Length: 291
Image (cartoon, rainbow, N blue to C red; front, side, top):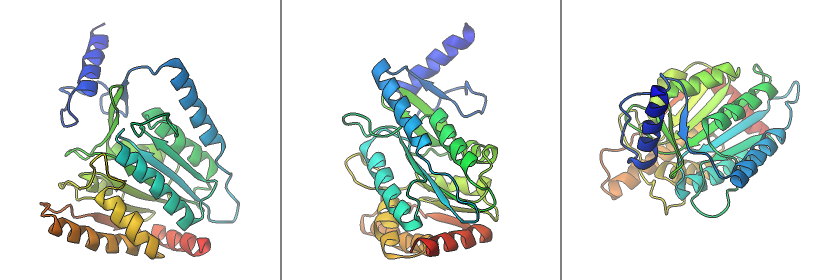
């Protein structure tokens, strides 16, 4: 009973407190968990159907061929993040030739009927697990894009307004990928303090691109926008005009620095990247094959 009241109190904090508020105690003891209210039955059934269809719709891996699988997730229920996720997914899918091998999750866009499976911890784990079961871990590449708010400890916030509150630490994400056997990966994180994802993930099989340094905020996440600064500069501007995802990041960083100077936004976000050599080779081959 004491644990029930602790969880209930934490639920109240997660759902009504400002995003910057931190609970006094972690009820999940460091695990990836969520505090949530139940959805209405019809909505719950519809979102479950969307998730089932999305997982079932992923095409199998082709032996002897480098296939690219994609997971895109908007983790905060403001419209800007769902807009960014849907547009970035379309750009990446075309760039990498990943039709039929892409899944998009969303915490909702705040308007109308939900169009995408939810971005809950279970659905994130299910998407990663399904992709992990389909790929050849030695032959295929997985590209993952996350957009949301971030917090100073490096966690990424998950929030459906008035219903769900959680956070995903970089180590949670690393562990999910490891458990699913996803070794060759490109991880892109658009959030404040997202540079914290680099250290736990960096190895020769991984590329990590982040919107900000571990100790910096990123900009442009107002709900009415179509993109964050990072999403606009990287996906909407640089990647549309560049055949390489890595060099597009460098172009986007220059553009972001210019926008921040012009608007007197300080301190600068200082986007970060880590490029493992084997992952870079796989990404180059995937990009060539998609042209």
